[in-house]
Image (cartoon, rainbow, N blue to C red; front, side, top):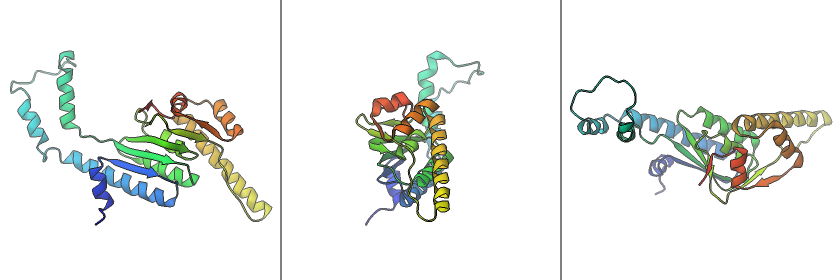
Length: 224
């Protein structure tokens, strides 16, 4: 019998997968999983004491009275890290993405879900991260964004199709221009690209690049 997605998520240690086109179906899938994992990690943290972790910590700590805190003792940093591992479970949600892109509004929905997450979201690019997908990757928690060495990227201007009267098509064109501004503002906040560099790519059309350039642009923080 096929396992429910919640069971698979627990087994996968907080991994979410966005492999394929960015559309309404992928939006729903990512939303359900991010929402579940936020609740699951919160419950994990609340149940630490009941899992016996605090008991383990108390057993391992010296029984002598604790001195008044006067600052961090460099000699005890290793011990402090051990305590942190006991007290703080892995609370990072990992969103793996390999996509040629898709609907820009659906991409914005996923970006909003990432921003609303109570816990850090590490976005990991692999294979191809193109069109709308790089904006999802760059919207991950800074310091956690990464990709595999052979990942290929594509940035290009927002595109759309329109039908109807000339006036109706003008409305659609204005909406496309607004979307383009929204995505540029995301890139300005989340990368090292200047406005001039971004506009130059926008005018040039399709702009392909690899992992090293993505690191240079500030789309990712490191290469796996």
